[in-house]
Amino acid sequence: MARQVNGEFEVKRTPESGCDLGDGVVAGHFRFDKRFHGPLDATAVVHMLAVGTEVEGSAAYVAIERISGSLDGRVGAFLTQHNGTLDRGVPTLTVNVVPDSGTGELRGLSGRIIIDIADGKHFYTFDYELPTQE
Picture 1 (spheres, rainbow, N blue to C red):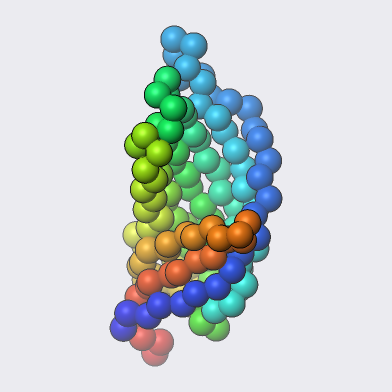
Picture 2: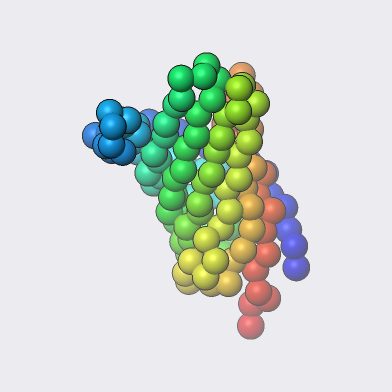
């Protein structure tokens, strides 16, 4: 059964050593520690690689995140994959649950997370599906 939950989360960013892509291009590497509140009551660690271009407002990032805690009372962990672009100032972002990454009571989890930032606060909308508990 498809479900949707919403809540807020805090983020702490820590720069890591950059990654050399060759020819003088370096991808920024960042670690994010998150704390989710609401129906997703969890902590997360994210590792992100980001690059910009010579064109102002054009950039991209990819990231892998491990989220551990509870989702609507079901305990476990899962991974998400982030893919973000900024195309001359127009952002797009997808954050998908990595298939078959759920553990514990979150085994079989699938879904997508939408992130919104308003007035300096971070919010999530998580559309997900889980097999019925036996």
